[in-house]
Every structure is written in structure tokens, then in C-alpha cells.
Length: 320
Ligand code: COA
Image 1 (cartoon, rainbow, N blue to C red):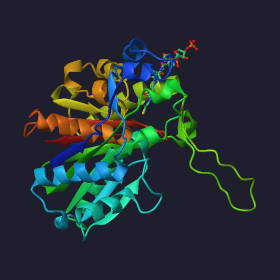
Image 2: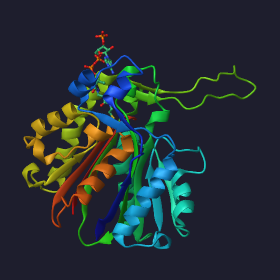
Image 3: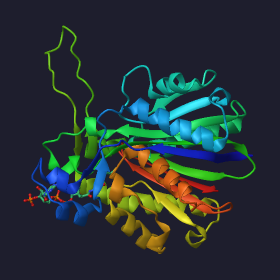
Image 4: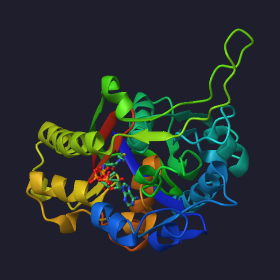
């Protein structure tokens, strides 16, 4: 027995912000952003929250899976931009869709969050403890950006992606996950500081700080290694993979991974041109876009690979 994705859904905020729009509020240009990243526009939440986007994506995934919310056993959300420290986004989703019997929690693995959450759901299902799960990656990254730091704020976007998974004979083959906390400083965002009466008060808020070139080097070496590891473990050749659904950080990272694996770039679908980097949301949103377009066929072998803050990385090999 394994775990299979039986429905997908996604939601993007209504507010579309192009590179030219950004160039009106900061010193940047469409040419700079497109040539270095491939990003042309992104959605930035105005009225939406992390939970409201997640609820909409969940409703679509449930409809696609032909499941009712009260049949769901488990809700796991990969996110670093929860609306509240508590309740979790997963608990907010539970309330929003009335998944009354579900056990709900969030996990933090930044841009690898969806793959980490999927592995947790898979492990639970394999024990027999639960029969199905709703797994999400959702972010409102625009609230963590320093809008005076043009080197990071232009890269990210907001949105939510969801999948319903259940026990099945075919589906997930396996995972390769990893973490390197010693390199955490390369991509970080400090939480609120201690303000108890015994420490000096500070109202500083944390913003995303990134050593872009360090993260780039990490991604182009770790991602192909991780993909080859999971393929090797299951005796699958890269040429047998129909789609490599990678975290959507940067077109140059994706091209470099394709080159290292000696696989055509056509097998690497992308939505970063209109979404930017949505951290944990990237993979499930792209997957839902592919599903909506009818690109996914029964029997296709697919790779998911996420990488980012922590540092963390996570790859999953599955059959559709
Ligand atoms: N618009 C215009 N100029 C910008 C800019 C922007 N948005 N952001 C930075 N610049 C400028 C810098 O100030 C610098 O100018 P200088 O040479 O006068 O000092 C110049 O562009 C080059 O900056 P640099 O940071 O060296 O650029 P880079 O070629 O490394 O590209 C990234 C920056 C972020 C695009 C690149 O490092 C990258 O893609 N890294 C991976 C990041 C990533 O994907 N992170 C998420 C992983 S989950």
C-alpha cells in the first residue's frame, strides 16, 4: 500500500503586480528581474489572508477528489506565514470547511514545506492510523518582505495549493528529505523578539534576509543530488520521468537542474513567470495548474522537489 493524490486545488490572490508595477515603487526594472529570475508578475494579497486562500484551495481539492470535508482525517499545512502563532492555519482551515473530525497542524520547512507535509501524511497513512489527508502549501510572503530590499522583495508572491491524498495501491514511491541548519542564515526571517520585563524592549519586526548567491549554489547542487538519490533508490532513470515539478524560485536554477540531470527543459513545467516564488505554495499550485490543463495522465512518473529556508530540501517520486 502507498499514498495517492486524488484531488488538487489552488488559489491565487486577485491583485496582479507586474515587474513594471514594482518599478514604479522601487528602483528596479522588468529587464533586471526577468533576466535574473524569469519572473514577470506575481500576486500580492490585499484582502486575502493565509487561511482564506488555503480554505479556497482546500474546497477545490475536496471537490476534485469527490470527498466531503467531514470525511477528512488529517490536515497538514506547510507554511511560514500563518495568520496566527496559534491557532494554526490547519485549524483555521478545519473551521472554515467544517472538517470536524480532522487532526490539524502546520509544519515549517519553508519552500520544502509541501514535500515535508506530504511525507508526514504518507507516513501516517502507511501506519494505518488515518485513511486520508488534506495537504497544503500556502504563503502570504508579501507580509514578510522588507519592501526597501529590492534584492528579495521582487522574487516572492502569495498563494495556496492543496491536495487530497488517500491510501492506494499506486502513488508515492518514496522520498529524499534533508536539512542543513548550519546554513540557516543564508535565508532567514526572525520572529517577534522577547519583550518580557527583564529584557531590553525592541519593536523590530523580522523580514526575510537572503544571501542570494549562497542559496543559488545550494539549490543547483542539492536538488539534482536529491532527485538522483530518490530515483536510484527506486531504480527509475531520469528519462522515465514525465514531469519534474520543482519549487519555482528561479528559471536559472531549474535550467541548471535540467542540465545536470541531462533531461530536456520541456519536462520542467513552470509557473514562476506569473507567480514568482510562493515558497511552500509553489509545488501544489503548479501541480494544480498542470492538472487543470489535463497534463497529468494515469501512470505518469512525477518528481516533486522543494528547497529553501532551513536550509531544507525534499524530493518525492510518485506515479499519477
Ligand atoms: N532590481 C535592480 N537591481 C537589483 C535588484 C533589483 N530588484 N536587486 C539587486 N539589484 C542589484 C544589486 O544592488 C547589485 O548592484 P551592484 O552590482 O551595483 O551592487 C546587482 O543588482 C547584482 O546583485 P546580486 O545580488 O549580485 O545579483 P545576482 O546576480 O546574484 O542575482 C538573485 C540575485 C537573487 C536573483 C540570485 O542570487 C538568485 O536567484 N539567487 C537564488 C535566490 C532564490 O531563488 N531564493 C529562493 C530559494 S527558496
